[in-house]
Length: 219
Image (tube, rainbow, N blue to C red):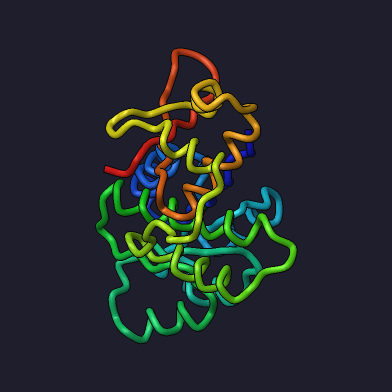
């Protein structure tokens, strides 16, 4: 199983940061790190923890999150109450991959993170990327804007998709058994189908151990 993407939340409100961390931990494939409450703490945490993604507020006690964004060589999504157009333009110009206005629901952040995961998968699986893949990656960053691809499916991919009954969730191992392929093969095709928006990924928590990834047809 691929390692979870590590997420650093930068927010000066401790209670808000903990709430957002709980949101992050509820999304399959993501793990929240200890939040940072200032620009200086964020820089220290990024240097020592090397997160995959930063969720960044604009208003911080020792500076602007927008100024911090300009210093980062790391993926970032803005989570902020700053709703003025200049802040949004600056954030986009400095490389923010998303901009989510507070207050927002757990589902809104979940959609944003799932979109980011699709973006990572699309660009992470190929050494040579064509223009079609670039456009897919750009669309993947917009929650709700990914539609199932109309590309022809291989026989195995079609079998994996057909094994998923509407309203049911399956593990990769269960799909492998239903289709008659290895778990690694099932995992690979499930990830590809998730990139295309044909399959959604959820978490199921057990009594012990790490949460299990479950796959199903989007409702």
